[in-house]
Image 1 (cartoon, rainbow, N blue to C red):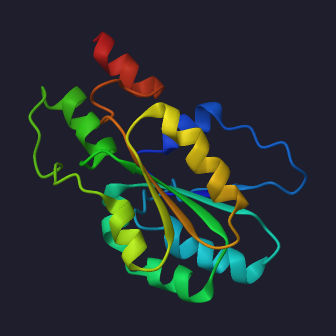
Image 2 (tube, rainbow, N blue to C red):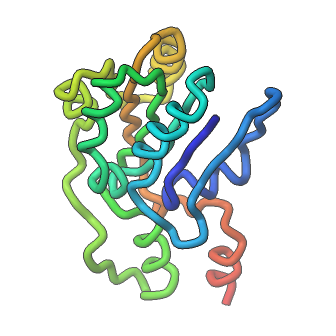
Length: 174
């Protein structure tokens, strides 16, 4: 079961994720763009279906809204792989500002830190991934672990390369 926040992971998940396992699910709160959803949602998903293999995906804006729930995951020892896209910005909002506000950015950037250290402080196994070739090893270890794992993936902002959102690319053609 893959649970994601609205925002950073959304366009890539919608474009590339293909779940083939029987009973696989993808859950995302797209209707209202609720940030901070994925981490508490995996708690509920685990309580509803303890046998499910859980993966959560979210950006750092979302993490800022629900980081305290890392303690819950640790205390309950919920076997989840948390994938955090660390780009130091509200990426989706910044991309929209790049397209519609001639690159004037307001209230979207913040300090990009080592969020794996934060997860470790809550008792989670954690990885800070700065290079693409580190990701496979982190994912392998994460899926072999029987508890909560946090993978902090340092990533570029959506502004650097717009994701495959049709309306965004159409707006740029105008």
